[in-house]
Amino acid sequence: MKTKKRQARIGGKRYISSSPEETRKIGVEVAQSLFIPAVVLLYGDLGSGKTTLTRGIAEGLGLEDLSLVSSPSYTLVNVYQARCPIYHVDLYRLEGERDLYSTGIDDFVGREGVTVIEWSERLAGGFAGATVIRIVDAGGDRRELNIIPPGETR
Ligand code: ADP
Ligand code: MG
Image (tube, rainbow, N blue to C red; front, top):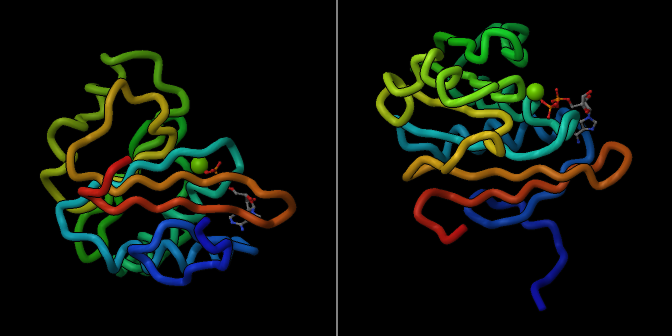
């Protein structure tokens, strides 16, 4: 059986975060591991920390004003200009395929900058070459993150 010790290395598989701050720092490390253009698919319930993690990814990509990073629930996509454009997509309110295409996703996903997608559960499929991150609320302020780099078996 695999050790339950928290592996602190990105490229490993499982991380435990004990605070929003820690989740943000994990996001910074995720950003540093990306090869741009990159796609990050986030899975996890409401309040699991997807937006918090995205804030860390944006920080790692050099965004200075992190208060810009909030769930684009109504617009479906926010764009932040960091060292590269960051497309922050939230599919919580996605009604169908047409909605998805109306975001212009085909023009940027995997083509330009970094695309981070919250509620990837709503996608019919994934995107080739994406980093997949699943977040589970482990009680209190604990969150378990499972990070699968591109190319590894899901
Ligand atoms: P989501 O985008 O998945 O709905 P948010 O990042 O918007 O989640 O919110 C996560 C909430 O959980 C915030 O209120 C945050 O303060 C709280 N929280 C508590 N512990 C953690 C943690 N370890 N990591 C991330 N968020 C946490
Ligand atoms: Mg969110």
